[in-house]
Length: 166
Image (cartoon, rainbow, N blue to C red):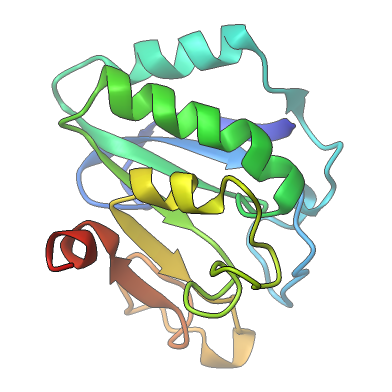
C-alpha cells in the first residue's frame, strides 16, 4: 500500500490535534475531491515498517488527541489488508487516543458482510475506529459550515458509542 501524506499536526480531520495518514488509492473519483492525486494506488510512497514507527512516534506526545485515517480510500480492499495492522498497532500502543476514519463507502451498506468492499479484515478494522465519517463527497451538497465533513450527505458515526450500547 502507498500513502500520499502524513500530517503530524492536523486540526481539520477530527477533534483536537491529530496525526493523519492519507492513503493512496480510491475508486470513488468524487467530483470536486480535495485530494484527487490520491486516487492513484501508486501515488506517494510505500508504507513500510519505518513509516509505521514514524506514525507511532508522531502520536507519542500528550497533546496529540488521536489518529485520523483518510485518503484516498482506506476501505479499498487492498488497503484494508495493510491498514488493519496499522490500526491494531495504534490501538495497542495508545489505547487512550481516539481513532477517526473517513470513507466514501457507506457503513451500513458497503462495510457489512456481503457489502461492496467487505473483506476478512473489515470488521476488525472497524473495531478499532471510534468515529467513522462515511459517504462520498457530493459537490452539490458541499457545505463549508459543516464540521469534520465536506458535504451534507456524509455522516459522522460514533462507532465506539454504538459498540458500548450493543
